[in-house]
Image (cartoon, rainbow, N blue to C red; front, top):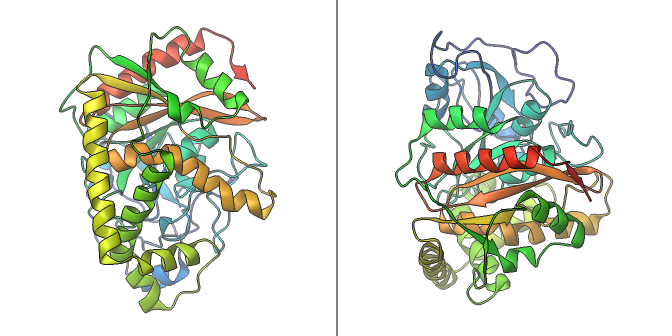
Length: 397
């Protein structure tokens, strides 16, 4: 890393290697952290895994997303910690440690882009690259009280990035405010289908997954917005849609990451072991059925949103849990959260997260989900909503 101190243990302790950036550009004056699954020239790519780190050669060129931000003037300050192989959402790495959540030190920071979220939340860099497969930008943004975005799937190159599940993997960014997020995202993509006159929708089934306290935060965050109730977001029910996500993401992982796990003989930490086994066990018939269900879900959501529909959505069902939580919390939280997070992933839609308040002493964010290709206008809508929120007292539930 190039920063002098790292009180939150969010950067990888690599020997510092300077990385060239442009002197001028739209991101001049901003500092950049990069999740350690992106290639950065002069560094190995560790992917949160000691074996992957040992097998990685020193990279000779930057991943295109990294290069674009450097060319725009952002100054690289270090590579950030990640869950092993980016296959978790808690931000706890058994090998390289757990970054400290600056907004709630007794809580998980969220993963797998934990180091990037923490670095931004702690003021150690202005923007940071992460990846989001099942929620790995959106959840830590909510948990750390910052902004984060999963863009329209496929809009930003993932060349030079370790894959987990190719049809879900996306390149996201963290920032402490919406304007900075917009500056950074505008370097990486443009709007294909901007939403200028949004038709706001309140997803009844998603809100039904929330307890009273987080529901109060989201209702206050979107107070004053005329949003029509939307029933039927999950055709066949939430359980059926979530199972489609598990099957199709597992099918990708079976191709993209399980071969490395098996061929390397790497020891598996709790959690990854079960997910790898489940992915490997998927049959061709199960995968085909899942892909058909996913295509139907995508068409269903596209029809609901049209060109102007914007979901006012929760990010997760609850705030981040405590680091010393009992094992049943660790086992259950991910599944409840993913029932909400899977919507944008399955449909390939952009989702932006912004801070909204605190629940049980920890940050709790809210989000907007919009039609594909509306990424930059979606951030602008969120900036407007954040300005309205700032005029009211923050909610603590």
